[in-house]
Length: 280
Image (spheres, rainbow, N blue to C red):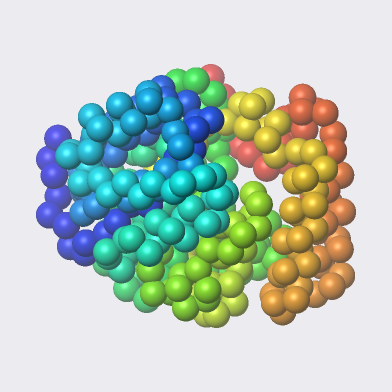
């Protein structure tokens, strides 16, 4: 593996909590060690006490990934955990990372090359491939708009980024108040505030991350609590001036109804309406 010289120092930011799979964590961290452009630090927030298996895995990768581990006394949720991690990141550019996904070996190299060619961009993501068990066997693709104008339009209806692919400028995030607590919608709420503030955004059409999907993931995206969060998000977007009241109500109705359907039915809708299926 050829390591590329780092043109701009950057941090990787992730959060880990007790219920996450140690095996998936191992796959995720291993993919970081295979990056042709290595991060300058990897900030991992322990969102409350985690399992011994987790700690053993972190210890194995601690040196190779220049880890900075940020332990929290109790589980505080993703937004507060990421906010705590953001405070510990030393570099202006930060790459988000999920502890159960797989990053393409050239993820960071391709993102940095894009930023070199587009120096005014402050928020960058990419398409993802989704897998159920084997990270190399992609079953679906989630594509998102590529240009700033298209991203802003899309954001008024749906989340325009795959959060696990995103790189952003720390100063731009802090300028809009950083991560705020909005269960399951923390990242989307952050993107809306950044876009509304005029931060230039882009997505790449490369599949730079393979994200873990399947019925378990679909199951987590339903139920009354998720519907309440959908309403809170649309209300915040409206109060912020990003969307109109009519758009907020329309969005909520279109998104809330599927959240209350059985998981198997929701999975079929999710696959047909929001993803591109990969043919064998």
